[in-house]
Length: 371
Picture 1 (spheres, helix red, strand yellow):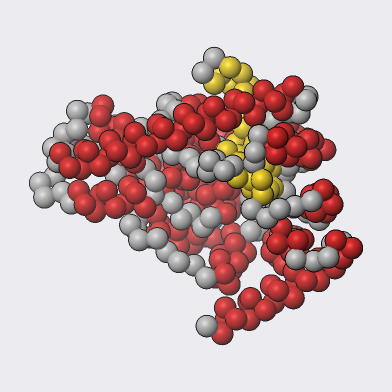
Picture 2 (picture 1 turned 90 degrees about the vertical axis):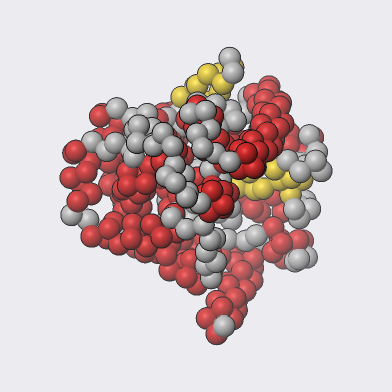
């Protein structure tokens, strides 16, 4: 299954005798690789693929097409409405990633839209989403939304009665993962062609950094995310790789980015320039991260990670103490939507919210450690 996602010509023409197609399907489903695998098998004429397996892959593929096309309609409608209000938008992942990085709108699964807007325009963007019928899981008033914007929150998930989901970001990543200032991301962003329409996304190097760090943030739990990183890294020229290393090293993110690069090279055949390989060779900390992540990426079983262990793993791949402190601050003091609505309006102020959140976090950690 991994070989079918590679672009370096290592895919065998036919699987070996006795190939376990049930296990292959399980692996592809667990790592959300169905569309990528289907396209490659289709190119090869489905060599030695049993009829029931082919039908299962085709069923997943057709479902992906339907979902993706529906999201494209929502995506374009949102863009038009936001642009009409002069709200700048950067598309993250979703349909733009499928079309630009993977080469085909149906070659990548996605179940939501990720849009980045400037913090100053977050309220306007939320207004447009609400006009289209999108609402947060928890009903929030205007004061709640203003409080969220003041207390370090960087995104809000909103859903539509039809099941569509939009993640609205007003910062690309938390402070612990930021590799540059937000205005630099906007200055380096680029327009790409999306079905004949210009759409703004991150610049090539920033996009590769974003995908590498997103894979790390989720503990390299799915090949699907690593494949996004590999596709973005493949688009870099030699100078782009040099800028990638410089930005990651300067911001203290090379440990996480380097581990994503190594894993993409090992599992997906990513060609890494020799100079970049030299920066990775002697990093034993990166090697340890790779050895921890590799079993997850080769397993068909989803691993359940407890909250304390997840925090520990996050801290492991953050290099700088200020980034570790920022992560702990976010986990312990950043209020959630439920924190806001459970309190009387007059108490919904940042210091009190942070005290409530800290007490709840200590309680949850204590309970998790005891069990």
